[in-house]
Amino acid sequence: MKRQTLLITGATGFIGQHLVKKLQTPALQKKYKILCLTRKPIDAPFVLGSLEDQRTLLHATRNVDCVVHLASVTQSSHKHLNYVTNVVGTHHLLEACRENNVKRFIYGGTVNADLARRGIYGESKRLAETLVKESGLDYLILKFNMVYGIGDNNLSKTFRLVKKLPFVPVIGSGCGKMQPVFVDDVVDVILASLQKKKLPHRVYNIAGPSIFTFNEYIDMILDHLHIRRMKLHLPSFLFRILVHLTGRTFEKTITLEIVNSIGQDKHVDISATKRDLDFEPREFKKTLTLLRDRHPFP
Ligand SMILES: NC(=O)c1ccc[n+]([C@@H]2O[C@H](COP(=O)([O-])OP(=O)(O)OC[C@H]3O[C@@H](n4cnc5c(N)ncnc54)[C@H](OP(=O)(O)O)[C@@H]3O)[C@@H](O)[C@H]2O)c1
Image (cartoon, rainbow, N blue to C red; front, side, top):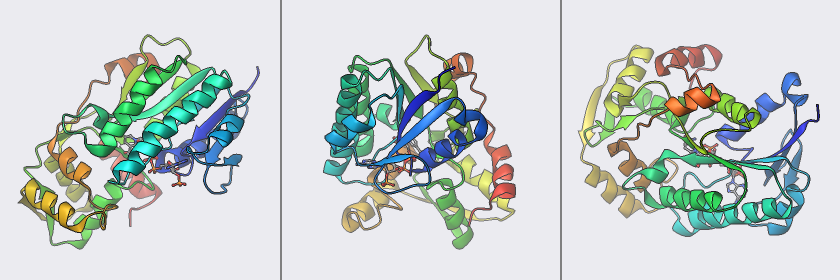
């Protein structure tokens, strides 16, 4: 059987790195030939370029069967940068795919795009989703909830904070619902979506099996670490003022997006994903043990 050629964007990112590593295992190398669009050299077949670079996109999408589009600005509150990369960049990539008759386009979306207060990032991802839907390509949108695992920028941050401070600062009541998903499960569902051609839906929610509040999330982490800490609930307006006063100085740690998103319910229905993509996400608590055994968070 002919190998499928995949173009992966965002291969140097958190999810992209896990996906590329899995695709480089011998069994999957027999099925897929990969090419990554990256802004720096990596240890996998790559073409140097960015989403702004239309000529490179045209070249990179030539003879490609499927594009997995994970590249995105994810940690910046810079409005123009979010727009140029997430919206305009996706537009350029879709154009290149159309030009080269790419058969399939898989888009790494986010639940943040559907929040009432979605902020700059969520809004840009929502606009990009619309472009994908209107592209005329055979597309699939995978809407990720918070993804965690080795090399992430959310759970590992919470681990560090909880270990360092004598209390745990919580934005607001901590009652917002969340449904984090393990990165290995995200990689598996991307692989499943590469294999399944005829799907009844074009948009699937990708989230963990359990819904819990931010407070419960902190409790599970404290239990796991066998430490006790008081939670210090601080009103979200204080964090908003802090973000406002400090501008983009601490955007790797806290942005307006994070402040707003913690207060909002982010749980979703994953029944269609389970049924159509054989999605069997692992329990948060179980993966914490797995992560500790594989690679303890710093
Ligand atoms: N992680 C999560 O919890 C989560 C949740 C919901 C949705 N998502 C979505 O899933 C996708 C992957 O997320 P992630 O956590 O892996 O993101 P990430 O770690 O922030 O990585 C972003 C990737 O995009 C690349 N990139 C950024 N701007 C680019 C540009 N102009 N041209 C080409 N590449 C560019 C980065 O390349 P450089 O290394 O060169 O900067 C990097 O490879 C994103 O679309 C994100 O919106 C993630």
